[in-house]
Image (cartoon, rainbow, N blue to C red; front, side, top):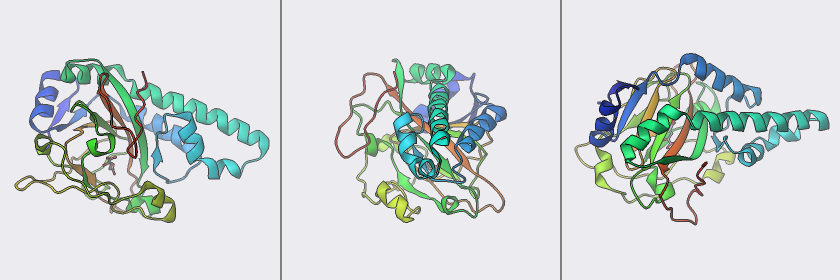
Length: 266
Ligand SMILES: O=C(O)CCC(=O)C(=O)O
């Protein structure tokens, strides 16, 4: 089971990250913070997708909104580029949330920084509403030199098992970095493949998956060796958006190459 813990209860959060490798932190972000974040994304006019990688970086956001940008006239295009700058700056501020950094620095017993981010849209009945992630460990993408990475999954619109639920496998972080099948190529996303995203790993025997019931504003911490994934959104009439980012101890080194290219924000 996944514990829901008030953000002020630092001891309990750290204990849960040690025992389960994951927990839901409540009270750090409000529903209105989430509405604000969602409205900034709406501002970009992307509708209900696609899945955006690194929206906190201007170049990434420009590259991923290129189709939209190309449809605009010259002056509108300039306005749009200004929007991109302001949205990416705003998201960087969210990722630098001091309370989050304080909790995770205490957990890591060292200063932490922020790496890559993503924004996921899963409105029921849309293409991206069907997006699902196979069980995986985030560390497989980064190949970090230590086990200090913790991903922060901010539930923007609420979720549960039926509503695009993120699932986590408590205790799986204790099994180290597992063999993974390179099952998904992000470049295929454009060709319509939104199912079975990420690099599949086997769940160790005896461990179970849980689907946290998250409210808007809940922040789900997931250690980078903790197996997790998600289902499609099957709840009629609902939306399910997440803004997620990765944190890591500042002294972490990464294996470069075909993996994500982590660039610490500070
Ligand atoms: O929120 C989701 O749908 C899954 C996200 C996920 O598993 C990941 O980004 O590693």
